[in-house]
Image (cartoon, rainbow, N blue to C red; front, side):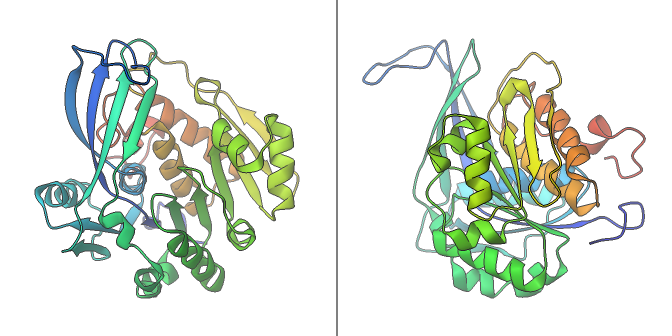
Amino acid sequence: MSSPIGSRKTRVLVVGSSNTDLVVFCERLPKPGETVLGGEFKMFGGGKGANQAVAAARAGGDVTFLGAYGSDSFGDAARERLAKEGIRLDRFQRITNAPSGVALILVDGVTRDNLIAVAKSANESVDSAMIAGARSSFEAADVVISQLEIKDEAIEAVAQICHETGSPFILNPAPTRPLSRMVYERVHILVVNEHEASSLSGEEDIEAALAWFEKQGCRAVVITLGAAGAKYVSFGDGKHGSVPATKVVPVDTTGAGDCFVGWLGVGVAEGLGLEEAVQRAVKAASLATTRPGAQDGMPYREEVVSNSPEAH
């Protein structure tokens, strides 16, 4: 575990996807086969990996991003956005035979709910070989964060190398798909929303889902509950609880979950207990929903942590 952030910034390695979000704000979300006219269009930086990297950087972490982008204007712009956040990009590789990631997002103008579709892209190039080649970055990391917008083999390689190096591994299994038992056993903290928890476990009840995750070998699970906050449990010591969300008027919920994960990672890297790390992450994610855009909406440390010498 790293020394406190007062002596140096904690080192965060984020492994994952980078996308450009093409967003239409609609009066309401269309039904299948329906066209809804009159929505406002905006373009933002996105991708769950890049989002979490930006969140962690603004939370005060010294962030390295491991991912891939294509040889196109979307990729060049994505790299420039991350560079402006002070994120280390020596592990962010340019791929010549694939386009950069693009996500199509519809946002409901009333409820602020969203629908998201992500195209195949250079993100598919993040594989076990790329992970193995970055071993020194894993060895240096105080925490490693990943998601499921990259290949299964990459996720399994991340889980294994974290196990070998002793780096705490936070996994956000989104978008959901089945995981191997090895991954569950290697993850230090699994972060899911209630829909993902149900999809992975086959259980509608949250307590039943938590019991299922424990049987898979998980050490700790955090379930985010949107406007209701988050629920956490550490199976090793039995610590558990709920954290209410900060009351806000949401503008755009896109990226709020990624904000939570990035902030949670920095909290864990700084040595916070699970409850305190979740509390901080909930506060940050609540703030993120009050602003448009996944990356643009991420709050800075000074907005979440009082009297922070590392505030931007």
